[in-house]
Picture 1 (spheres, rainbow, N blue to C red):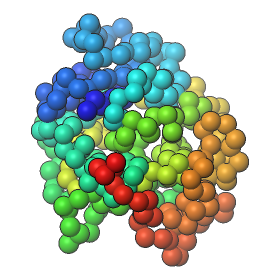
Picture 2: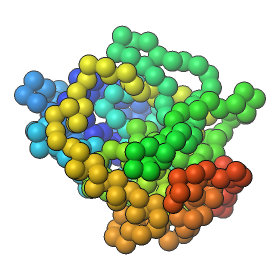
Picture 3: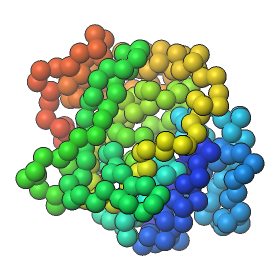
Length: 303
């Protein structure tokens, strides 16, 4: 029941509290394996976990970092066949037995290749958390700079049964839980910078046959505000890399990429557009998108 936990951390004082809470709340902390791309300065330390065999730390001077997608790709390179894959940021908090419960939700999803993902509710380091009962969903927001589709959190409507995972159409970069096969099927593109990460991952995963679901209960929280935190773009000249990244995103969304980060063979990009209600070429939306999920067959739990 091992879980490979991917954490890309950039000069983040919340990394240590995140790791502590992740382990303290897990039902089976001994089954967790951490891949951490630790992009840090001289003031930070991970000595607390030095020598812990569960941790595989990629030690990077922050000045040598190439951005979040590059960091996530580096971490995926450390995957060693664990049964499950969890991708998250370095600023999270967790519900009790989050690992056991996520595995249960994954097996309850009506798909042979399910992925749990959404925008998580908020916490702050003072200990306050948004604890509303309704989970948030992921929805299209608008077309951003360079024609890149941007997402936002939405509210699951009142009255929707919360006894099993809820169908979705998009993937979040800061919370994604999937079978371990996701790592080999949908490896991160290290040439992407920031905008375009989530929509390209959604297109690539869906065209590889994965179906998306929102957990019916909030099991993790994410620190959004981070008003005093440093980001990669605060320290680096990033504009040229960002423009090249957006060109790559546009090619992927038009089905033009031919390398290992292209769309998958199970469904087409055009079918994803119809499914998600988007038209990438002219940056519009469809009037009548498909229902939230196209069935893929028996669930993961049935083998």
